[in-house]
Image (cartoon, rainbow, N blue to C red):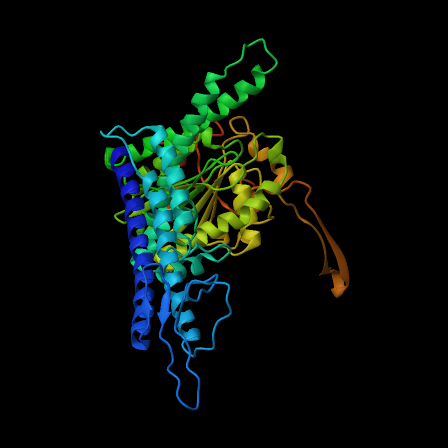
Length: 525
């Protein structure tokens, strides 16, 4: 599979380079032919160096004649053998000069293209055999950058930045097939990150980025390990931290690739990499099944301490959701693990709302992108599931804009930044909660940080219609597992904060029943 993917990427780069070179040379050739045709029509001769010779003008009794001469392409003009002499007033000179300049521009364009693409193509080489190494993938990333510099925006339009998912989709649909191929070849990271584009397109872009990053990180780690200091040295701690960071990110990439390799095992569908980055703690968005065509789509948002180095458990949870949900319906299912934000690193960091507020537009953009790729909200039943701080992210997203989901499930939630389930915008009956006992999962107790409470003043009618003040004090913040919150509380058999996705568990089955819309089968408290 790695050999196939490497071959596809390399062949695409070669095809892009050759096609763009041909197009640029064709433009230069056509311009040259037009200039030569004009020269012939005027009776001018064009030399191999682009210089143009114009004829003399024969005088008569009433007017003097003018000598012929020669002009060369800009920047300077030349007449005869003395380029510094003033131009004689021959009426042919201006037209000859224009033609010479056009010839010079066409020749320079061809030479520039030839040089740029020769350098880019020289990079696109590999050794014999089929053994693809990290160094080869790392080199592919450099090849892509070099070719993008040669091509520019003439052949591959720059991916948009700052547009809505719907506008992104319209931009993509407006490209020709060739432009789409070139964009994918030259801008894989940007295309892979664009919400609203088809899942298959984003997957191709992100897989190329993943392979290149694996090669780059592998090279960095090898170089880093070669400089290992003594364990009793002052440099040891810093060296060891960097070693663990690089090793951890490579481990995360291997976990993603392991999911790719599981396709077909036990009926597991194709995986689509809808987002990937190694920047900071990393980003991973991976779907089980194509969400563009799914009847039921679930988006799982993980919580505190999530990062690329330990992503396998969250990939597994989304996979478990797919297996259980798929068994409950004749329709198609896609479950997405959305780690597209900067999650708090520690429990102490999770006490703050900043990360959730920053993540809100990112989650909304992704959900809106799913809707755009699906062709409308009516084409898929969408459930968004937040675990722990992930539920806080969902709550923040609903307060920023109407969330593109039919159901919301809060799992082990410390609060969703709203007072009532109805404040989430999907209807109280479509908000669901799973939370184990406080002894098994104490996280909901942290609702004092992210829950909201009743505190208000109203006026009610007293005896005889006399208006009396009514104060409402509720000092305990509501979390989704609170009865006052208004969510449907589902039965759970989880024995700890991360046990809600255990195979064959009631917790997993209840989530899956909501995902496929089998509300009547949900086991409620």
